[in-house]
Amino acid sequence: MPVGTVYFVGAGPGDIGLITVKGLERLKQADVVLYDRLVNPELLTYTRPDCEKIYCGKLPKHHILRQEQINAALVAKAKEGKTVVRLKGGDPGVFGRVGEEAAELAKHGIPFEIVPGITSGIAAPLYAGIPVTHREYGHSFALVSAHGQATEPQVDWSALAKMDTIAFYMGVANLPLICDQLLAHGKRSDTPVILIRWGTMGRQQTLEGTLETIAKKAEEAAFSNPAITLVGDVITLRKTTNWFEKKRLFGKQILLASDGTETEFAQTLRAEGADVFEFPKWKLVKKEIERYVFAKLPSYEQIIFTSSESVRFFFAALRSEKIDVRTIKAELCARTPRAKRALEERGFHVSDEQQPLGKTLVVGEKGLGSKEWCLTYEVKQEETSQLLWERMKEEADVRTVIFPTVASVHCLLAMGDTEWLSQRTILCFDNETKETAQTYGLFARCIEKETLIDDVARER
Image (cartoon, rainbow, N blue to C red; front, top):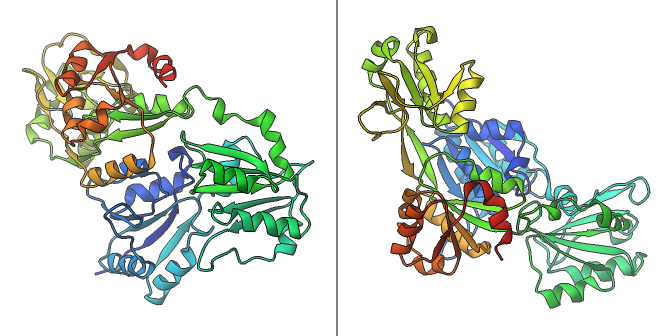
């Protein structure tokens, strides 16, 4: 059996839009993904349905994988001939232990590739409105690991104190030591300092002070990791360049219930600065298309696609069967904006779905009345859904839950935790969905899809 390849991929600092194009391509190709705690789990939705996912972080009642176990897993999976992605938060080469893991692979003759990512020491300050370099304030910039095998940072404090801007990774626990050492080696006591927790995400928190005051402020605020500690005069620019925290939904952490169908609500909410958690997690399992569909293709007068995935699977099947798309004479319709875009990207004119036009084929979803349908995939719940659900409840402060459909209520409540949900604000898009939520003992109210952002922004 040929040996597989391991790809070390930087996932970026948290915002799922900050993974690189190349990193996302590798993630979509993976047979196995080993991912860390600081990787945004929403990135896993881009993996193939049959992709094996291995969590390398720590959760309540779950033991952390030790480094030697991670190394062994990378070697073992690659020797099975699989394409393996080691998904690391930020950049794998910046305090990401990629050197240790790559050396282990090299020892076993396993090929690997390293895909850089955006490191949090640069991204978190930018999302807090602070460029780490500036012609007036910062000509030099240093990245420092403030935790590790030693009990304190192992650095040349005298050299470090001469740097204009310094980013300490995970430095909250050692903050008194950091401040004392920088002051002892020549930094001014009024040098600005900012702590940035969960940088680039809607739950981002900041705490500002100086080398003289920040340690006490952090203790009083019980500020904790994961956080970047930034030191330098460039922080003063934040007063005029703070952009992310001005978004309308900044600070909002929202649970969007999912029934496995395609929506654009999560994307809309994230664009306004919110953290969005979609549950349950679903995977698409490809189904073989019945051959009669291909034989009857020229006879259909209307073909309705239910999602962008239905478009992708359907036309992939046509290519596989060597069927010329010009045999399609039907009017093409799309149930979702994404499905419409997917068709238009393939050069088709797309009509809004009207009344059925004669012989109609529905592609992608079963159970739509008397119309013929072509099942291109089935939606099944991800095995990791419950694990990620527990992690969300541990790390996030979700106060708003949105149920788009009746089915989404049943799907989410099947995971349990009715009591936890009852303590949140419940928003629905129609009365039927609201009444369904109420049957589970949840107090819910209706909002309009068109006023989604305004309604969520008003929630406390």
